[in-house]
Amino acid sequence: MKTKVYISGAISKDPNHFLNFENAERILRENGFEPLNPCKTVEYTLGLSNYECFCASIRLLLKADIIVQISDIKTSLGMQIENELSERLNIPIQNWILDNKGIKWKF
Image 1 (cartoon, rainbow, N blue to C red):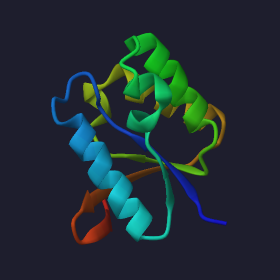
Image 2 (tube, helix red, strand yellow; image 1 turned 60 degrees about the vertical axis):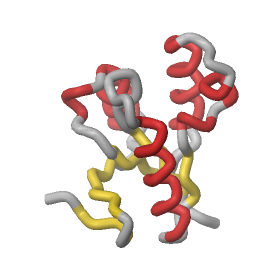
Image 3 (cartoon, rainbow, N blue to C red; image 1 turned 135 degrees about the vertical axis):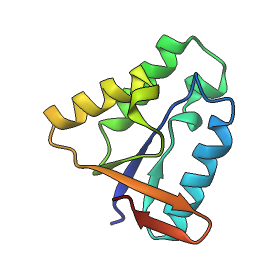
Image 4 (tube, one colour; image 1 turned 30 degrees about the vertical axis):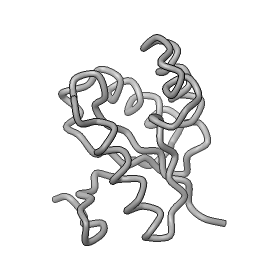
């Protein structure tokens, strides 16, 4: 069974968020993980409200084995909420640099 990795990143304040999430999803998949991409929820693809999309994201996060943060948490209230929830639920949080060559640990 593959490790399920929730992708956490800035969305509303990042005009390139969809591409960033797509790239992270691809890299995670290529490295043997099962990515959970909040930009692929039904709510997001239908263009529903930010609230409805965020609720869908939280439901997705609850399925995760770990979370990877692809943006600076200071830039996103949603990421801060995801971070707090994951800490309370003991879902490990990883800060990785994802690039075209794969995954690198962020120090």
